[in-house]
Image (cartoon, rainbow, N blue to C red; front, top):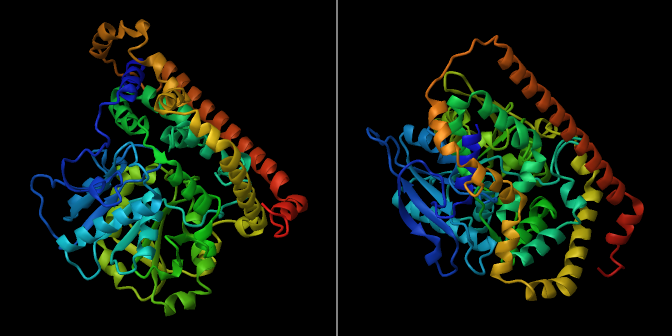
Length: 529
């Protein structure tokens, strides 16, 4: 296990490896860095396996989430979204990205790149309904807004674990809703972007995820690899290859995402503008198949779906507009597992894509698709009441609080950009930015187990000697029982800590923002902010 941690640290500190983890060979199709407004996105076509039989004229395009880590996560395992789509007989394209954004790159610029990729795939594989887009996490909302910006595009969109209703969720639960209130909004990301010489380090997003999902990232995944080290070591290293590599965003990009989406919740409120054009979520007129999971506390089902009853006046209004929305809810997969797991890809995504014609032939309305064990789909009509049951509706109850947090964020950001940002930018260069990035805890924690530590040199000789003799222990072995007990106790303890911390966070945020005085000051139109 120490050798696995040693290899993980070494691969994390190497900067010369390719910038994605796609396991399937591919060829480049279109490079976004050559566009009039360059972006760090690239469209590639996956090479089909030997014996591939093309069964469909339309193509599938997968889009990697640009949320802090390396591209290609949904195509990194032996069984993945990419391999499942190829097995179904589709020609598959994938959108990947490089570590650094292009100078001046903005989020609307990336929408234009996605548009260009969709148009090219549509041109190569003409179909009345356009290509099928499988967009994970951040890529889901990015593709959704691309369609709203360019309504002439035709495609079927499958956003996976992608939030569109950013204030939804259960009260007093483990979620990321309170984080903006705890940090004063977008102030800290703006400051860290200035320290990064205008770029926001993806390791900060990864660190946020790790501290949020403490049980798995700090303990459970290490114990899984330790308890079955002969079987799990390679899988652990394969996963960590993606986990320990961080993509960056321009300052303008991270602030756009925070102020418009996660803090401002502007799309659902009808306030989002892209290049001066007002965006209306009702205008998405292609088939939309929303994937989410009950076990996902980063993008829970409520955040993926609660925008529907808020944007449409009623189910009848949705039907009159000719909209078809289908949702698929996994019972327990976590945020990463829903697009990383080969089992989820095979048993949930596979049947949906295999029956996409059936979904496209549905009458306008709201439906739930339930994958069956035999690979079929059970499709049941749903109402807005079914969507409302996904959470306790505290998003609506706490709307004044979230609006206040948004106002506080604007206030703090305005003060920072006026008085502090010019000084911070003048004192920062690429050398200082590199030092700041190198001091990130996620990177520092890798040094003790890397080859930079001379005390690990004996591993070079010890590991081959230890690997060869393998003794199968009985399941009732005393030491295995102790190992299982330590694992169960550690998970229970960290789960308790996570729940307690979540309660504390919500209590602090509500005490500070959900009161008359704060509402009056920060939402008072007579007080200049």
